[in-house]
Each structure stands twice: as C-alpha cells, then as structure tokens.
Amino acid sequence: MDQSELLNRCRQGDELAWEMLVRQQQGKVCAMAYGYLGDREEALDVAQEIFVRLYRKLDQCTDPGRFPAWLASIVRNMCLDHLRRRKARPPRQDIPAAEMTSLAASGPTPEEQWYRTDRRRLVHRALQDLSEINREVILLKDIQGLPLDQVAAVLEVPVGTVKSRASRARLELARAITALGGGPDGGPCPDTEAAS
Image (cartoon, rainbow, N blue to C red; front, top):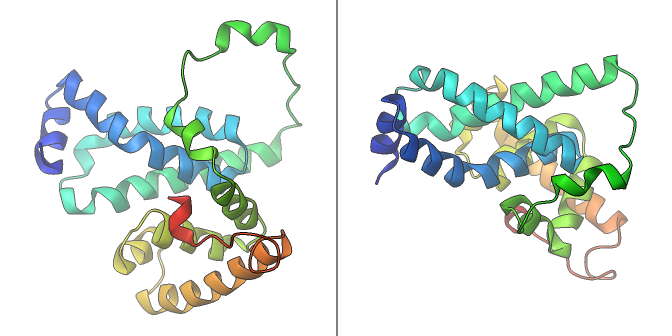
C-alpha cells in the first residue's frame, strides 16, 4: 500500500493502517528524538508522545509527499519543547533496578537494533558535540534523508542556508568523530548514512 492510501486509511480510523504507519515510522522517530535528546530513555518516552500527537493531527497533512517533512517538524518541535522542560526541572531520580523487572521487553525493539553497531554509536556521540543548527541539518538532511527544500521548511530558513550549513555540519561532524577516536587513526570513520 502506498503512503497516500495508508494515510487516508489512518484518517478514516483504520487501526491496522495506523499500526502499519507506526511500525513504518517508529525507527526514524526514535532515532531522530535520540539525536536531539541524547538520552535513549527520554527519546523513547518522547517518541510515544509524538505518535499521540501525530494521530491527533493527521488530518493536517493533506500532501503525502510532504509527510516526511511534516513528521520531522513534529519530532523537532516536541524534542525542543522537551529540552526546554528538562532545563526547567531538577534532574530525575534513578529508579532502582529491582523495580524495573516488569518493564523488560520480550525482544529487541527497532530502537535497540539501531543502537547496536559501533558506527552508529560513534556518529551519535559525535552529533551531541555539534552546534545545534549543524546537528539539526545532519539529522534532517543526511540521517532522515529529507530533501533540501523540506529541511529548509522544517528549520524555517532559506534553502541556500541549508546548503551552506550542510557542508559546515559535515566538516564539524568529521572533526567530532576524529576527536572521539574515529577515523583513519582510531578505527572506522562512519558516514552519516550509517546512522539512519
């Protein structure tokens, strides 16, 4: 089923279509949230909130071709809101491991599979060292694969700014990877495609 039909069926209340859409998008949403938040558990929590908002606002996306950029915009806004709330509250308390036994998943989730490779971990550690605008350009353009015009729409900047930022962002990412021990002298130097 193509994206347009899937979205139409979701809007009509088809639960199987909604489940299919969530499965299709959950890896990207969780990966993007992790890129913004830098914390796996927070990314998973925010991803759940993102899907609730997506369900409520699905009628607002009438062009299936714009769906990836529209979804990326929702993820970005909710992650930035979460980061603002995080700064406004004290650090959370850890839950004792004994209390978490009932929360264990029965198998690996898409997010857990995504975290497994060293290349991906290295890219994401390096992403946290980038400036905010450069991290967003890498996340949206290179990792999520959005076209330049859609990245520009999400970030609310001109396409030319995205082009120039993309080059600078890749250079900054390469320096961050090298500083973390990646690259020619310290092992594999991942490209941004490895993080998607």
